[in-house]
Amino acid sequence: MHAYLAEFLSDPRVVELPRWLWLPVLHGIVLRRRPAQSAEKYAKVWTDEGSPLAVHTARQARLLREATGLRVEYAMRYGEPAIPAVLSRMPAGTRVVPLYPQYARSTTESVRDVVGRDVEFVEQFHEHPAYIAALAALVTELPDVLVMSFHGLPQRAVDRGDPYQSQCLRTADLLARALRLRPEQFRVTFQSRFGPARWLQPYTADVLAELGAARTRRVHVICPGFVSDCLETLEEIALEGGAIFRAAGGGEYRALPCLNESPAWIAALAAIATSSA
Image 1 (cartoon, rainbow, N blue to C red):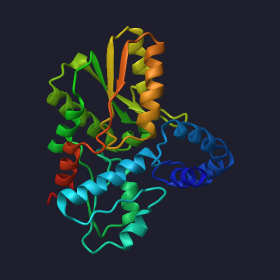
Image 2 (cartoon, rainbow, N blue to C red):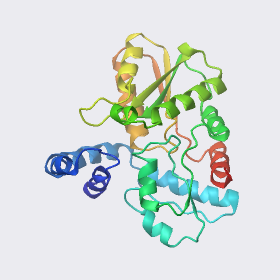
Image 3 (cartoon, helix red, strand yellow):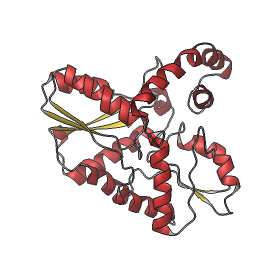
Image 4 (cartoon, rainbow, N blue to C red):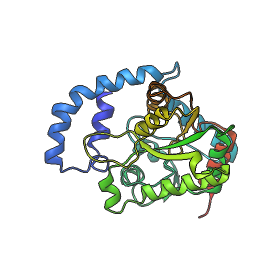
């Protein structure tokens, strides 16, 4: 956990502070506390096969290989299998598909930093019809309020021109249209805030508390920015989010699964990966 967090939080795309300022804080404070805190959270969602994110990603790669007949390998931006090692054994003309539906410099562009500029690169698929349809298929019944929770981003990143927030809102709008939701039937929120800076709002935890205090009978949460269940969906949304909502007075709470290995998502991923666009 220490090695993973050190790599992740040392990425200048992730923490855009001057290195002379951030690195002493990272190594002197953050990495002395955060690994134990993260390990405690991971213990709540760990499976017999390992990390949920790694398990689902490996399965998606296998199913995509079977669906397309192409050579498909997966890699992790941080940790193993590492992107450079995987790319080194791939043929020329390899296409890289970062599994971030919405583009952000801290995610998509960080992958491009590693793979370089000489590969085919799918920058985003936030409004791809097959992706939207796969998300809609996850919502098998409509609650009183559907919360669409996206991973957060520092507000300053958007103020500097990052299109992430607008792409999240576009995804949410298309999903709401696909489900024929009225404006009062859904909320768009942002989760996983880190540090004292102002992040994109409204914060998911605040909205869940608000809905609970309003005695909302049924709230379901979908996470369109995550194609695989992971710590942020299984622990932060399913466990912490449910506790916040119920403690505030809410009724039924359900965290919907991510796309994972759903047939609609594998079909969408095949279309995204093989598109000539």
